View 1 (cartoon, rainbow, N blue to C red):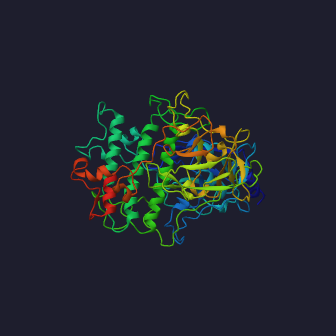
View 2: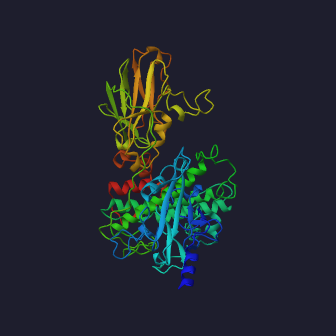
View 3: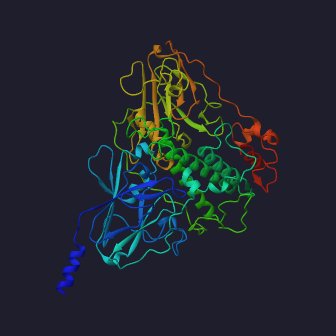
Length: 590
């Protein structure tokens, strides 16, 4: 007995901590697969020893939008068909304090802090939806230690946002539950491996008579890859019209559209500096280390963001008992045919993916005095122009001209949900920072009105009410604008407004409001009694959509509706559909 006890103590004795450094292979599978430093291949099997501390690090930039979770069976919460779970997924390993036989804790190092803070998954996961430049300001790791053999024989690590990314963790000496039905990583053929794509190979010769890239160099690998993915989208967007289910029809067309965007981004990432062979020919990396502001990062956003949206659309279709797709070339006669494993159908009680609460943001300066002589309530008309136009409550039309009185305080409110991704700025000439051709600005754009403290002749201050706080806090544009890139579910937890007051007539005769993210959304503000030199010039009028686009809610599709016979002869993108406004609109944009 003494010898057995001694052996058990030796087995459970703590050893040196083990670091598992995770990254993502963006070019494997449909959504990418995890890699672990020091292990071969993707989704590698990891071995865990009892009593040893393991740290799962998610430092590498490719981990963005891929928070790791642990579960007893493949896919965790994604496995909505797990028996008896009523759509809640396979049982996950509970994190946080109070666990028995194991330790499983998430850690975050927040911006400006020197130490990691122990948190829960509910704190950890939402940060992975933040824009990559904000996400990268944090550091992420997970602590795992198993002390009780009966905890499990094996568990899985998986991605909490993207499905079908489970890998095995085998527990040496474990005697509890065991993982079953773990899918091996899907393998691409040589063509897709060369392109960095998924599912494009079989479409290389499926579009005779169609060339999606014209000009020279069409035999190059790049051109062949692009033509294959474009053919794939072209074929798969010719879908069956599901009358009168507009949402299903939309998703049947949007999923292949998104898949094409993902594949297209992967083709270019395959040639990028940080993720490929650095043969792209131009610098698309970040402006400085850690900025994550380059086109390379936009491509990463396209891959991870649109793959997540594809997953959410597939879940919705399954929840409603719909087919995942309905391509006219391969119509499916029964629900579930062709779906990824684990995604055949959903119980009617399934309510979609979880939404997490974010950690309160850092504090800013003290709350302002209340001065609201007038309020301009802004919203965005999503169906005008190419990007939408601003509306102001009480004013006619879009991008309305506003009039400002000297010494009167104006609160520019951005409370309406349509303001998301549309932070307002003020400038002396149209489009502000977007006007990169403004004379003498060296690409910095037209001069903007400076916000914050220390201004002369006017007051222009941004205010944010942070989650859990009762008062607005004065901030700068550098604090205000980044929040508009946050996921909508996080953005709505804040309140936003801008304080504007002009006291000196010499400030300007007129200025502009504009959107700091989207271009061509400038509107005029006339200053009554203003005598300054600045007068707005060359302000364009909002574009007016044709009648066809107005009824569709689209922009610039009317010529294609009128010219289907010349632009797309003998082609309908919705098969089995009788003529209707919806069908006409979809065919025109396709």
